[in-house]
Image 1 (cartoon, one colour):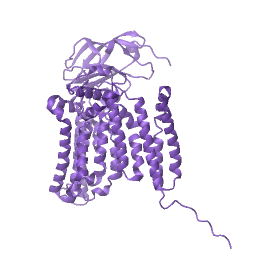
Image 2: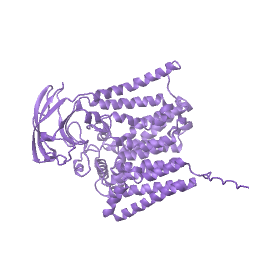
Image 3: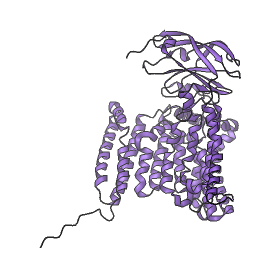
Length: 573
């Protein structure tokens, strides 16, 4: 009698799902990104840290093997914890090596020092902070720079206890890095067990968010405070009760708004979504009461954090927290403004970028209310779409908030909105109803799209030609003489800079010639380089652009400049 075939052994009944293994492995692999450069830096002068990083390398490798071989779900969950601990260790090692920070860090740390000394924080220029390496300036269209602190006060308040860490921006970067680690651990804990490594990967993997924390961005603190708010946010105020947990989440919302301005933009979307879900459950009056309690708690928290500044310096405080919206900073970012910055020679309608961003934000808020059953899970992503059209459209605005995207993706399914209230006028059913809704969408989005089109299609009002250049070496320029023609109908006061690559540089000062150029007129101006000389990159492909910004109206005029026009030699191949 032939022996019976042996049964093929399959995964244990309590074995982990394959997608869980893959997610843990991806989080583990993400820790490789950027770690080598940190180890190289540590190996030169911080051998203890280099040893710790080497141990982390071993942990990554061993975890990778075990992730693919363990048979029990509980064992894989423990490996998720190992990946988190390894990520936190690498994040702290990177901070220990690179903690000086950038402009955000030095401003926040200086604000904390002034606060600790009993001095005014808002409206105080600190130009000496921007002389250090890696500290960028923010040019404004009126020819100046923003040297003041322009964020709500929570970040300096959290930085004050850390001032003992040293000078420059180290205390601020420590506060931001600590907030990121706490936020990552919080998200890891709040997510369902199989998804926890996704929190590690998004918050601490790839070296992305830790690098923003090491730059001292207050937005990192705001993001960390929003994490408990966003996780399962449609259940906030369920059955008409907030409870201790709901009150704590409302407090976190207010604290996030007191850390940086970015949470201001997502807050209306969250409150509108909560109202829609609660109205579908409880009716309009009870839903309004729930939202008012949440908003009231958040506003009270925001005011309590800001109380000292409201009392001691109300005017400067108000202007300071609104500064990013009113400072008139020059165009910057990876959004639509790139058309005027790099693909055309400028625009005489830069204000329309700002109008387009505001109109798109309002349109998306309205759409999230009208179609909450479909768009509800995306309310943590929708606000950042508006920044793509704004005058300041840095990718950091999107990237720093991506943990909120993950929190919503995992904990806010479409089923949460099945009975949410959607405002609907009495319209015919069927095809006519769909056509009416499509028309509403078009009406809401058209103003933003028209504004964006106006901004993009604007023409540069100034035509500039280089007529003379004074050099101090084969690759440095000290003065430029320009012939500038104002082709527009308004008198303009331009401020000039010479840039290489994608970023902005410092303004050149006017030595000779009119500051304001009348409409339809031509003038000759002589400019002096900032700090006396301007060094042109020796790279052959480094592009030179002469830019002129005006503040009223906001315009940009650009001219591509050849090296020969500046009398510079060609760099070696």
